[in-house]
Amino acid sequence: MSDKLVTYTTDNAIATITIDNPPMNPLTTELREQLLAILDELESKKDEIRVVILTGKGKALMAGADIKSFPELTQEKAKARLKKSRQLYLKVEEFERPVICAINGYCLGAGLELSMCCDLRIASSEAQLGQPEINVGVIPGGGGTQRLPRLVGEGIAKELIFTGQFISAEEAARIGLVNKVVEPEKLLDEAMKMAKLIASKPPLAVRAAKEAINRGLNMTLSEGLEVEAYHWSYLCGTEDQKEGARAFIEKRKPVFKGK
Image (tube, rainbow, N blue to C red; front, side, top):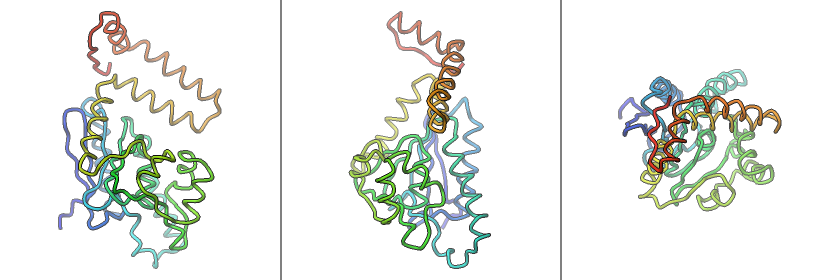
């Protein structure tokens, strides 16, 4: 088996990251470090990469943490592990470009927490999602108790976390946990279609929109409106804004350069 648990490919301005840690892609220390390294590399390519797709190979996006290591955990070891895992989750959440999660199969525990750090989620109709940590005597530790209620509401989040039950992709879409459900063979095509549409938009505006939304969710409405106003005003001084306005007036397709 290859020691590369995470790889990526690029197609024009889109990078596709694939997790490959068979059979169920658990979040091991090695996988976490490799994924962090790839995200750092892609972050440095600001002028080349406009959208990232994150997916898994085989039967799962990620079927949780490495449960085999749980019996040896102490409180101190658990704290140290969470600190490192939080670095990964925040890296995905705060990544400057949009991240689309293509959920190909089981998306459980740490996998669901990772997917919730992405901006958009597209699921295969065969996907199963859940936060089953309660079944092994713990609670979600990578943000599940915080991000899940923000996405689906307090009551549904508590039900999923208290019971540890899995839900189908269709149910996940109904409660707002995923944006779209497609047949398995169409998953990556649909993710790429969405990525190409986003990549065609002015990159500075897309980044500004992501930051305004993310920051605003943790602020009062008045504070969030100030963040929005700052970004809107800044964008009005960019070349892309002028190009977009001229193209609209001239009834042609704009050419955005990220300037």
